[in-house]
Figure 1: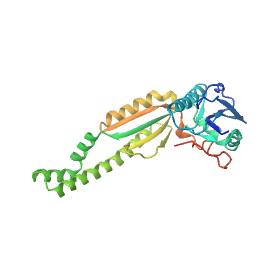
Figure 2: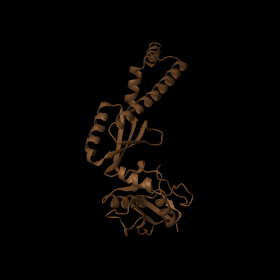
Figure 3: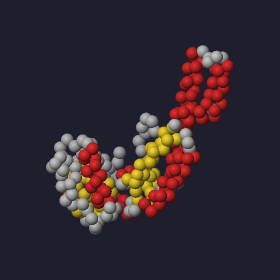
Figure 4: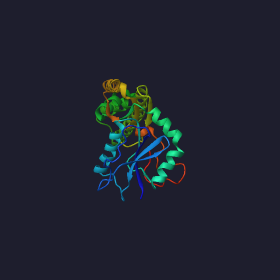
Length: 257
């Protein structure tokens, strides 16, 4: 049977969640596989696993339970190895890497920040700050709205100016956020977001981090900032146990999205 991997910890971790219920219906029992100085938190993997709410919550619950007692390298939902031997094989193969990551992520949490433009605010900025757009809009207004071709040209200019502003504001925001964190991971580009970044933050300075993000929010009223966290540091663990250098660990999820 395939093995589902929740996370990796030191073998000396004081409270590994052995015996609690994990993913699946019925819920699979969580167990611990040890290899040298490392341990993998696993369970049997159900057939046809899909990201249903119950299983997503179970995955997070196992990680929360383990993370409350010490540092854990969290795996993404859906991380599956061929069997237990494949998992312990990767622990042995990647022992130095996982040991370094456990040390680097001790006492750290991840915060994800997404940003988009307030449409009305960014349009106002473009219309008032871009001289070409402003001049074209003024000319159309003096001409009673302008011809269809002139209105189309203005629309194209505004769209291009908004896109350029998105790129500029996204780069500026990433630079400002990078100053606040120990590490930054840029997420996949997606429609609607001008920035999607994950930041590694020392838990002792979390309040200062959130206060600094709020200052950025207040200083950029044309941005809609959304902060999610604290989270397990998913974006700072790679590769996961189902992404071995060898093919032995089989298929499944990935350590990062």
